[in-house]
Image (cartoon, rainbow, N blue to C red; front, side):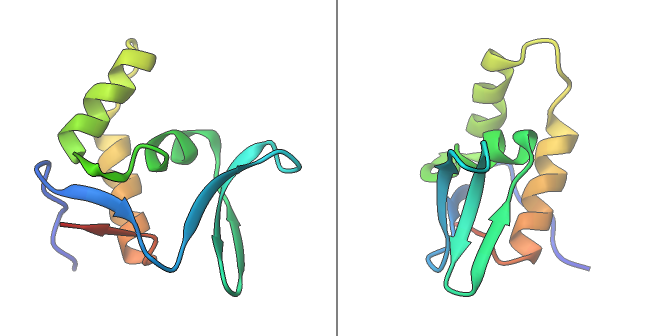
Length: 92
């Protein structure tokens, strides 16, 4: 079992991936040399905030500004754990 991501960790997209909005998909995607991962709306909103300057707590707080009625913490933590397990992000 992998270690949980700390709320103090600064999160960034891993070097071999590039996150971008893809008009033809109408979604955020992660591009990598072998292909592309199309992200659902929630994953796109979370990962687009993973710029290396924000902690997990900062990302959650920023999302709460845009989605004030949503209980986001567990969803964010679960997505970030899955993204780390897939090698999409790194946590410092």
